[in-house]
Length: 132
Length: 245
Image 1 (cartoon, rainbow over the protein chains, first blue to last red):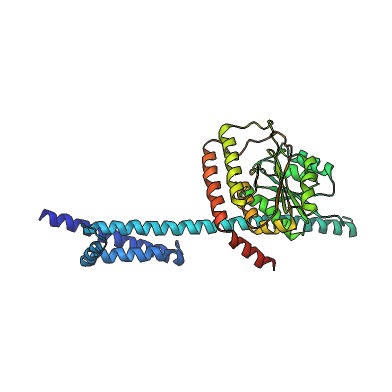
Image 2 (cartoon, rainbow over the protein chains, first blue to last red; image 1 turned 180 degrees about the vertical axis):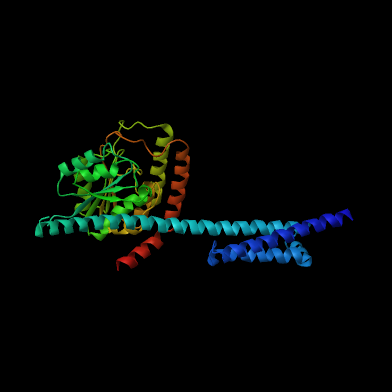
């Protein structure tokens, strides 16, 4: 009996955790705190968590497939996988952002110089035609 | 017609010396176009450089690092169709009288890139710490193997480039700690590199940016970049050729 309660307890925790996660992610997208394009991995994995924590047979089958005796640990395996993928995606996005950031700052520096030179030329021209 | 020559001067917090560097360069040859690239300095580098009235000053909005800073100069050189570009540190380490020597091989078409080396001839003047000299020697060996050419001073930031090299580097230049990586990048992409001996001043202001714990990060980062640059040369080459067509 004890064993059954313990086993059920981890399942309840998993169900609550994954549903809260799904709602939380969904809420963040709804409020535009996360862009849709960056939320796909989050949504995908939270749905998988919800499904597998409710559908015990599915989790058992998956655990058997990858050779895990204690089925709920298969959830942790998936969790680690999800975190890895999402973090790698972050690294890609950060690298792209810093590249774009670099180009923007270079461009802004070059433009500032150009504007200053145009201003100078303009003010010297207008200075010669009308003596202010 | 005289060739258009741009001196690219990257500067980060060099208020005490930047004006002297500009004046020296102007005195040496008033025909040179001087371009200071102020890498988001927090001191008065901008004001001191602009006050001379002898150099154009590009002020980057925040510190982007020496690589992207110098690359801004290449972009400027490309846009304004300069024939040759010289990379010259804003900290007073490089000597203006060496610029002509550096320019000669690119001007006569002997090389696309000329590196000013402190170590090209045996020289006891530059004493450095043990880890640093190990680093410098390691670069020498690795780069020599990878591009089949002995380069004695891979970290020197005193270099001359012709138009072809400038155009290439304006779209492909490494970000932080770019010097050794740039040598590989240029070598692997078929640019003719020549090294000549130059005398340098001891640093008169500022300390090396590479110290202590950072040097470990520096070595690992540069090695990784060198390795990857070695793996992907053709990609850059292709891209560059497509762009220039």
